[in-house]
Image (cartoon, rainbow over all chains, first blue to last red; front, top):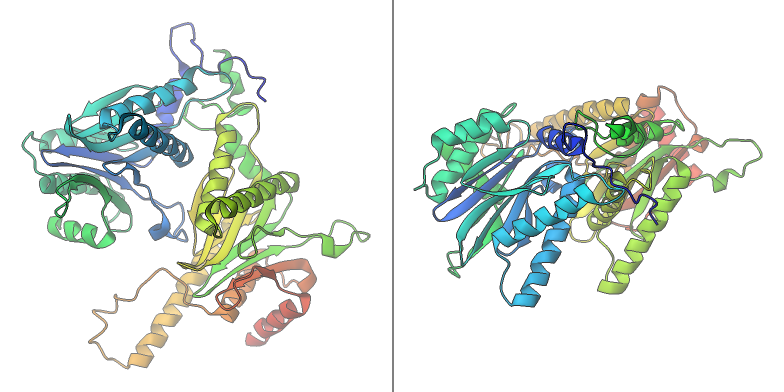
Length: 239
Length: 272
């Protein structure tokens, strides 16, 4: 099928992998996303900026569920993100079948990092143009937030931002974050951070929020995408 | 490094983080000179596109860019026609396998996303170039109603209330935005007249401001035809366009006959 038996991401004389630098640039050209880990949950938010007012924004999902207790948002090339999410969902299911246990957030991040790294070294492919913020819960480590980069590197964050406004957002988060945050506080801080760097008014239609939280009925932690109504309630609180 | 010269030839990143091949493929869509417009109404989706018969000896009935993926889902392609045919084949394959595996018709949203994911592969692998086609999928879904999706060479897929693609894509989008705004203002005026100043259900007039176009079948098709007329700047005849619809009453994707198109064109000219 492919005659490209050589890698496209190769070292230059100064030891840099230019394609990786360029792919990180593609990520910082993307719409901002951010996440905050609280004591009892995780919140991840992404901007939904359509390229035209004719786009049906309500039909557009940018927050993805990977397993019952893990979800993610992205910054960068949406099409690449969809591919990674698809692989993540498969990995989560394969893990469950093999170990009879839900995949841990850190393992999920590790596997995604491995997939991303593949594309930085294999023949005839370019790296992914997207970074993911993965929020999840597992029994061993509780609520966690991970970032996966096109380079294949992954980190665990207390709070982080990716995309266009990442440096300003991270500064804002550093000031407002504390280790004792509850999920409700975290959601408010996250919304305020998005509001800071947002071009125009934040509504429940031009952002999307995912949370890892304890379900009141079952007592289990799960990942949910906030409905527009729930989101509006949170927005009303901070206004 | 060596790769710096290749970022325009294959889909690897440029120093600005761009993929030049994808940007070039958008230009390839504009090259043949066709423009397509899709409009979604209350219970109808309408696709309209220009039709240019290349030679007098060509059988005009064989010239078409409207394809049926399933009896309910239709697709209009714009751009490089050979690439388009390959993607139509792939769409039909995806739809048929879904039907076989799951026992029911593929929802148009899922189909559009699967085709977009297929396009994404070519943006990441060097051995195949990106197809120079944009596809407009339409259907009246039995769960969510009329839907319109556009898939482009970058692997993006968005749902639209109205969209244009092809040579006059930008003019089309701005015309459609303008027409939608005017239509909504028209509809708001009519609502105000009906309720006659009754403010109880209005909450400042902001309750029902949805982005949708509340048009029936006839109005949707007229909207689409008028939009194309404005964009092209000429009055066209029924043999210079193709129009296709899916409606709630008749969920099958069907092309309008020249006679039906003529009726619409006459109605529109009589309105002015």
